[in-house]
Length: 478
Ligand code: G6P
Image 1 (cartoon, rainbow, N blue to C red):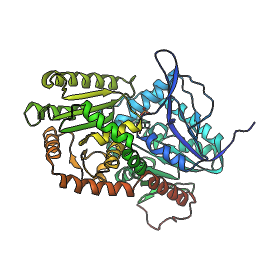
Image 2: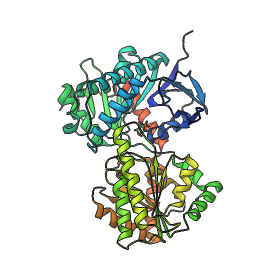
Image 3: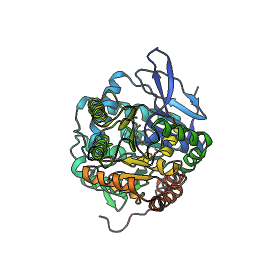
Image 4: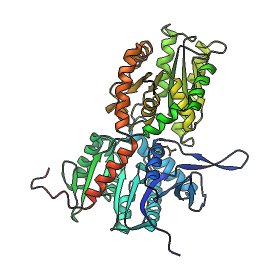
């Protein structure tokens, strides 16, 4: 029997739910971590009728397509070798650090690349099988950069969009990659390649000109076969109204109160919520906070730092090292500065559902988001959406994509510990009027640019550029 085909196919490395095996051996579904799922899920819901292809986590899980909460999901199994080579290796120990400013040293291994190619091919074949004639296929993120061209070879009738959720590095870094040309050519299979920020799109176009030799003009690439590819920025966002509604719900208000009480009703609660990732700058931020306590600017009776570290990529060595480093630091800080019933840092190595996150955002006076490099950072936007009383302070790294929009945050350079200390203190001491002025402006920004607007602008552009007609070749090209 021929498979049912769809007009919209989402292809991402992960499904929105992750199949986990508990220590008892029982298998459960959990919501997948990270910003990608947070953003795409509401898009799929508004486009009812599409299908989402992705990995359900774990090795060798052969699962049939299924519906989850109204979404049509098609699980792609991965073997242990594919997990090690494609996911933990090439995606997360080569591309991830390379695309994040070399915050950690990327490793280059030919066997990892081979697995990456293999997995990309399987995803492309599955998308080709499930897409209806002239359907739209939207491919997501760095784990699947070869899919657009592989898919175009199989199905030239499709309209193909690609979106990179993480930063795209400058040419000086990207060209270290032994497979730089293949990746660029893979992406050029798309009609539209979307990035978080305009500089990323410009980096891509420059690299295509230099390394592949295609003609380009501004944000357009002209391929020898007559096709035009557009590269542009589409800063991603969140379901602002959904978060706001959740934050206003009686249950979340009550839970926020309980959280404050459980922490001993301190004057100020600082909050960090991040995947436990070395790009997030967790270590430096905790040091900055602890130094403020050690130096007497803050007192453990008045302030506490709640750090939620969401488990992530635990088989990758750099992530294990990071976890050990952070947990040692938290232990040392609490040992030095805490008192009975009053730790300086309340550290939680876990992930929470959306309503608990909303309660934490409501409970926290100062949200601290200090990545060394981050494509966007949706946690910063979620915090703003949940501050329905127009209070609370956001301390935000200049190197998060979100800083381009949330300009009224206390912006910091995460490499500058003293600078972070003074921003934390300023936010701690800010007058209510000042907090409201800043928060009101940021709330306006995110209510206007929510995830629906993001998806709609990407889809509209994809329709325009995919027709090949809207952008005739200019007479002069750079
Ligand atoms: C980031 C990436 C996503 C990824 C997520 C979680 O948000 O952009 O592609 O899915 O992190 O990471 P994981 O490795 O658990 O999928």
